[in-house]
Image 1 (tube, rainbow, N blue to C red):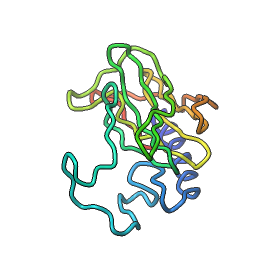
Image 2 (spheres, rainbow, N blue to C red):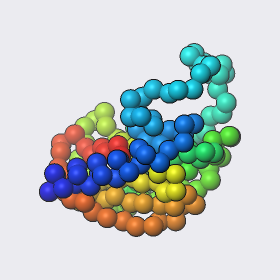
Image 3 (spheres, rainbow, N blue to C red):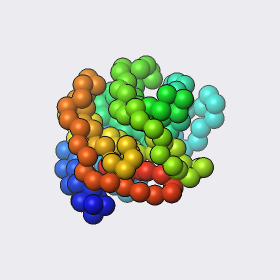
Image 4 (cartoon, rainbow, N blue to C red):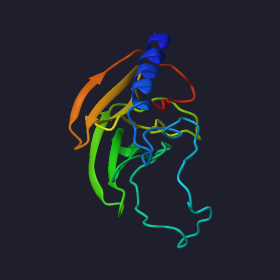
Length: 169
């Protein structure tokens, strides 16, 4: 089953890689999957005020990378007290919350103390955003439109680990 789940996630990832714009960061490690940007004149230093456009508090805990599509920033978080995993959509210009979706409300799975329940980075193909979480033992792969409406939900297989779940599409 783990092989089937990996194959499903790889197929989704392959489809995402071809449908991006240069200025977007559509998934983990960016448009080419190598963590580099073709943009020039980017800041190389930060402080609490230097080169910071905006800051916004994020509820819960998550280790996902932000994903950028146009003026939207997507990231995940987990609200441990509610046992809920959430997809957030923020405004790239000011950090305002455009929408949030409770993707999964289910008992929390086991994880390593340095992991989070929202470690998976979402991905976008320019028309939809995809996110995955673990509803032990099933992986939940969920697709949303850019306005936060759930389009579909699939379980490509099962997963078991003492370290916790993470899938960066």
